[in-house]
Image (cartoon, rainbow, N blue to C red; front, side):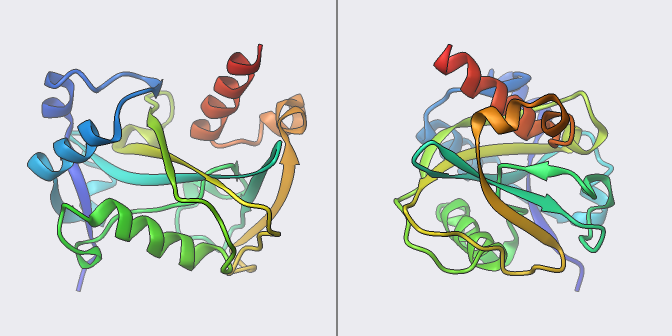
Length: 198
């Protein structure tokens, strides 16, 4: 059976005043209420090229003191547009199997975390805002829901053939050679961190 992913209509999202490029601070309750009211499922293959919809992607950033967990996607991952890109976000699509709309973000986020990282102790996810980027093709059809996790543990990726991971400092991320390899959402968030600490 074809994978079904959670989407929201871009026009409705814009009419509600939420379709703003970049990182946007907004309350979690507002976004969850919008998803509950307007969320629907489309076949993933069709959704990837349907610019009328945004696929909802929880995007978890893992902090350990002043370090951030950074991953690198290998060529064995299914999304070819992100091969060899680095990311400070862990997450993925929400599926109809993740449960009712009222719980789908939390349950899907927990599933993605278990799938991508080995078990580790961490804080409750804290919602930070949304991510929208219309500068690259892959981001035109995705909406990021940014969450922060804090841990004191070592963190390891589960599927080492598809992804590599390690903790780095924000200053390492802003080095031009490193920054140029970040996927667009991560670049936006790193820039946000710099502005916050300026």
